[in-house]
Length: 539
Image (cartoon, rainbow, N blue to C red; front, side):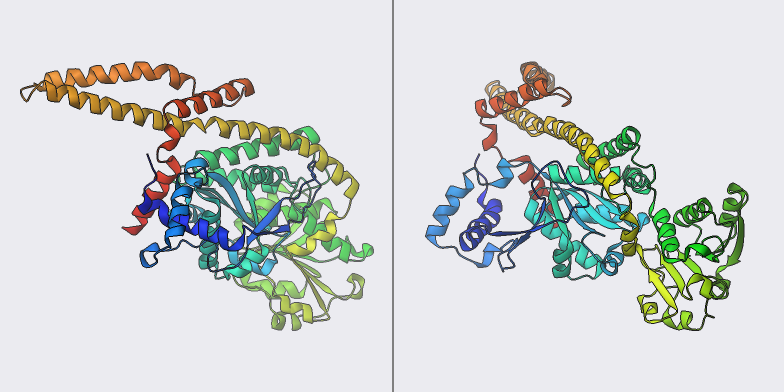
């Protein structure tokens, strides 16, 4: 069956005319890798030429193409160039991380965990997005989607990110990275394994990936492909850590924050410097633990409630933890040499005018008060850097800490890549096993059309006085015959992807059935999904 021109015309014309105008030129900007890969190829961010036709769906109701264009268009409609009838949906990641994007932009893009279900719902309401997930941490903001069209899906998600964050789309395109299918899979596996983190093997990111799955359970739009991807990523993260012991000597961002502070302090003051922590959440608790591990025996903690501080105090024996309410924050800061901030506040807690009025610190700590801000959005205003008596460090400055043990980091990263390559192959096989689903649906639909047509002919020949019982008997008979005939082919179209030989045979069977019953000429499942989305959004 030919693709209906009312639906396919606009998108295909745009593809044809756009490609004819620009010769398919794509700019490619190398993505800065934290660790080397086994592959010598660079994964790239594809940036389309900024033109009026770039990824724009043209409304042909107001434009009349020339006859030559129409002729070429008709050929294109029936050719393999129609991406909707020849391509399956793609896994795409649109990301902005600490490696590509300044903290000022990331904090605007950050989505609180409580808002992830809403974000998934909004993303999946876009015309070319079928499934979605959000991974938003202090170091990264990444949107994972199953796109029915790569280019249009990326365009829609980018526009959504711009609309929700207030960041211009042009700025997002400058800093984002785009990864598709196998590269997207490899990326989330590396993220989960801690290879894309500032601190190699840090455990917090694996917990955050787990949280994506936990929050996504039951959310419409967190579908089979995306949930399968993240669940497999969790498996990869666990395997890399257990087999390579990659987390030894490398912990969370909180640990890096403590190490950075100690790097900036004179060594003689490590045990005597006055430590203050603002916020006693998960990150704050880790800071306290790492300070204790480094020999700090006394610290002040400012928090909204005392309960969390009391719980931490009971857990860490031999450490003097003094609680102060949030109203005493500035007074506590006046008596501190090093101030760590880790709160969910969306506005800065410390500005230039606050810090300028604080009394100076002693020469034993370098005569400079240190602010280590590990919050996104930031808790400490960058304007404080203008003061000679204070230094401010945020998550972007933690790169200094990572420079230690570089040789060991690279060795473990290389070993981890072997595991990731193996797991990526398994995930790809699982996705390939899903490729037969459209063929199964189209074969059943094809058989059902024939059954209904022949049943209608049979009943019409039997006259108008056919009883309901007879009609039901004929209907049941036809269904039974079709089901028995389809049983064999359906069995040979199903596999779990775990056996490469079986998978290969299944895909061969799928292609054979497509040829025998001309199923590839049917309207593709992708096109049906896009049409349904467009119609739903127009209501």
